[in-house]
Image 1 (cartoon, helix red, strand yellow):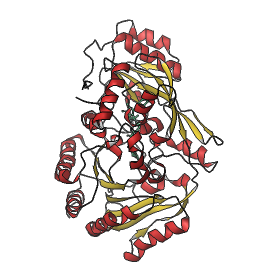
Image 2: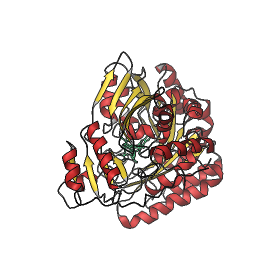
Image 3: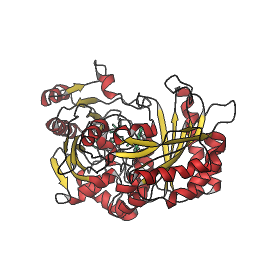
Image 4: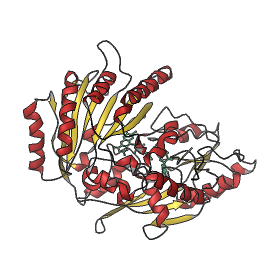
Length: 473
Ligand SMILES: Cc1cc2nc3c(=O)[nH]c(=O)nc-3n(C[C@H](O)[C@H](O)[C@H](O)COP(=O)(O)OP(=O)(O)OC[C@H]3O[C@@H](n4cnc5c(N)ncnc54)[C@H](O)[C@@H]3O)c2cc1C
């Protein structure tokens, strides 16, 4: 089997002396070089741990600009990295061309076709707002602050996931600029192999997606929220969740979270500096049935705070309460098919801090998957990375660079301790930085890896798009 190298091409990575002027002349958007005003703003994103130093940054305003920027990089032998919001950085884009798509934010909704057309830099917020005006919903994730295209290229598992699948399943077409700078419309009938690869295997590695068309679904009011239980009861609550979740209908996507709320003013007072066990989720079926299911939890143990209620899906951000201000964050992930007692004990022990100590892991969230998430696996490139039952995400904030090694090691040791209980596959959207390149092959079966490698080799033989998902070593 041919394995595509994850290493950058050895060709010259510095632009020729006439390069700078040439690129700025070719595109309507902005171009920044190191040291110029605007360069630092253009390379910054949500995750403040990303400190990449691209050779040049292009901020395209339209598809034509993207074509020109990619052709420029091809002419100059530059690697190409892509950034929309900076929520999911790959390997640092040092000495590469960084295409920052954040100004390409067009969104339109067609209520008759039940689709949204979304440009490369748009976040979920405007898509949700426009779709909800017609009683429709996109398959967004835990926050409307994430970019639609980056999220969808890696799968996209949100609160409607068990019912409707991953957002990558809902893509009707991509507008792609290939690594040699050719614009292509990619769909089930036009370049079907590339279409297949992009729907869950195309984060930053097969070209620049400038627009996508995605299906919308008839969801307007949901029963959703959080039950806050004491951190001391975490093991007992997780055991109940492990038994309860697999029996729930597809209308319910739920999760259990061990959460150490930081002692910061932005955190509401009752939660500030405290740890909780949260039972959270979203029911998108008959609202009375959803309430009865959560009533079982209430009867079993009264929570300290109960936020489950009927809500418009426009308020979906309230389920996960994700931060929206940029922050230095580190995440990692594992898939599990069961949640045995031993795995629960490891998580409780390593995530919830002993009295008087500060947590190195801010949260451990276990999402219940299966249902449509798993059913879609056989048609998707990232088959292994979506067929597990429980999806674990560990997340930390690194307030000071000196804590970075301790946080990284706390996450790594937790994963090592969990090794007997995990499937070994990664969920691509919860991989970041070097880990994204190092572990992404585990999301694909061997058959799919072979097919992906063939597609990658044909599209990008020099592996210049090497800052996202990698198909091998
Ligand atoms: C707070 C938070 C909550 C999240 N919640 C969820 C969730 O509920 N479910 C879930 O599945 N994921 C979730 N994620 C993960 C998120 O979906 C990924 O990090 C995703 O890659 C972010 O895409 P972005 O464009 O916003 O970020 P960026 O960092 O700008 O891009 C992420 C990656 O996508 C690639 N990319 C971006 N745009 C393009 C393009 N136009 N063409 C080709 N490649 C491109 C880039 O190469 C980059 O590696 C969450 C992340 C955060 C930080």
